[in-house]
Image (cartoon, rainbow, N blue to C red; front, side, top):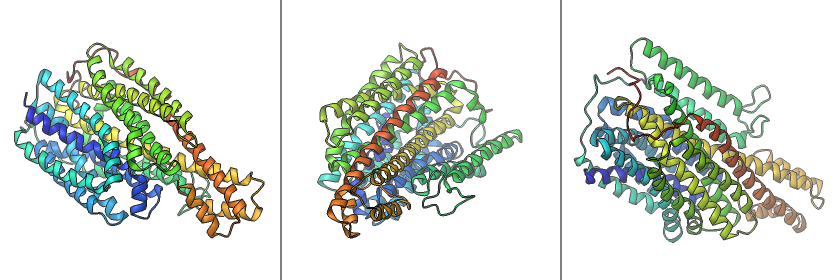
Length: 535
């Protein structure tokens, strides 16, 4: 086995996973550094995953056209440029351009190429080992991210993480000299630009609609830029995204009927194990990244912990995920994916409910750490199976395209997880705060009207001290200010519990969806399906 090449690919996998985990524990510091809001940082985190999800299919196709090794190297350069800009960012726009856009584009080129490069550079058992190592490195990235980000943010600055990423990317580029270009299968396809635009815009509109729902209102307008038939813009943006995705499917079918190259061969979606694996990847990332967005808000905004303290308390999830993903890979040689994934989902459901019980004004460290550890065990069991399910469902000629679909599902799940649970969190906060203020006898009608007016234009998840300052600046007396702050603190806890409860409930339809996962033991990368494209 070419260990130098395997280390190079493993480092690339680690680099691509690290970012989101780092940013989640640095939310409070980012808000302070750029004088912005939690909602804005939420949007940037979601946009990073969305750029990857929207461009992953294009990235995979570029590898088929220009060569996987070349696109892998170009993607690394783009990613490193984004990391450098992120490290030097001076405002929200430069942060979004460097992190969300450039790093997202680079990752969308690197990840699908990486899957195909493993298939082209390793064979038989070595290939299975390589896929297992990459899966384990994804767990390492999730494990290291919170503690590394927390340490850097607390003792130095989060910017150093991105300086380090530039150095790591340079090292990976050097390591590509041990990489062989997989032989091209048949003629080189042409890039479907129309399909790429339709898929990217469709996904973007859906996530944008969900992301802005807490500001615009889900149906009833709050701060909607446009009102359509008396409704907020939210449902129309989401429906518009779904229509664009429908047009994308029709366009792909049209190109295939004319003998032209589609962005993705629709026949792949007729492969039941692949389709089920993709849906589970989306669900798993939606739940995990939604929780990883919610928990830091509780620890930092409500309890006032710094980034390092936050990373330490999230570490049990990361360690549990990494350790169980390795154990799960070994279990895959004896048990089918379906029961292992379902057991993982049950554990995730229990863990999310345990986390709901830990959301209190003061933290019970023991209960919280146990709940986070249980979450990691469940997630690790799921993660350890899904990569092998996706790659075992297709033949060698379709691995690059299947890899693009795989990472699209993962990143779409990540962006939706941040957007959906973030929107639920903010909406729940505003609703609970409004109800608490309205029902409080010590708050005058005039003050209640002032609060309702402020809430009608939306809001953000901010520390209680900011609410106190706003009330004092508005001339509210001390007794009413205390009552308002008490109501806000209670609303914070209610909204956090609601978001985590929704995360738990999402595991239920996922359990049902897992029925189509393979019910027999799989050989890694066995390629059991017929090719979806002619070669």
